[in-house]
Length: 173
Ligand code: HEC
Image 1 (cartoon, rainbow, N blue to C red):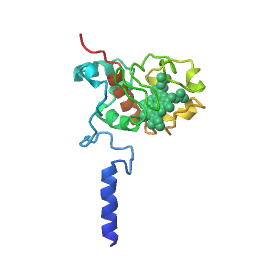
Image 2: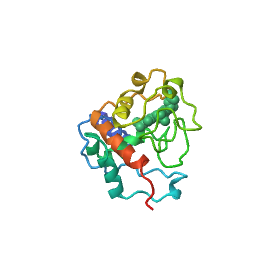
Image 3: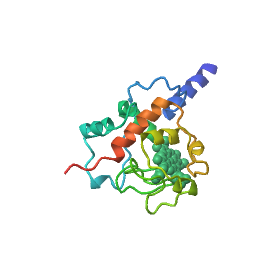
């Protein structure tokens, strides 16, 4: 009986693919990384090529320029329930993140930010995204982003590289 229960728990664990995250396996092949969720705006622009994405990541300061896009994409699963990243994508609970690099915090037109973010007074770059994603509520107390934070620094580096590649690309031509 006990063995059966353990096996069932392990199967659930695999299905949820979120158990026993130890932060030490970031080079693992993302065999079951979720594909990009279809978005209503996805049809408006061709997806950037891998070379274009790599060029964008290379623009980042170290260590973000070493970010692993596959792991970043799988970490973005933690954000998708509240954020879209595609150009022209809808605001959900949180604002659309297209163009976030170089955008003043709390400045996307049509989105109702908390005062904490609206009055933050800085412009998003890799370093500030790192601080924010480690703990939004410590970075900007009073924010309404109810995300506890991404504790593994390597996961944040990878996610920031992914965000750079996905949210800055302009369609070629
Ligand atoms: C439960 C919903 C939720 C989740 C999950 C979430 N966010 Fe947010 N996010 C928000 C909300 C709400 C705001 C607006 C915060 C405010 O106004 O205080 C926000 C704001 C932001 C901003 C600032 C946007 C701007 O225009 O200034 C960034 C950047 C951001 N989120 C990135 C992320 C990333 C990356 C993740 C995944 C690791 C994530 N968020 C996960 C809800 C969420």
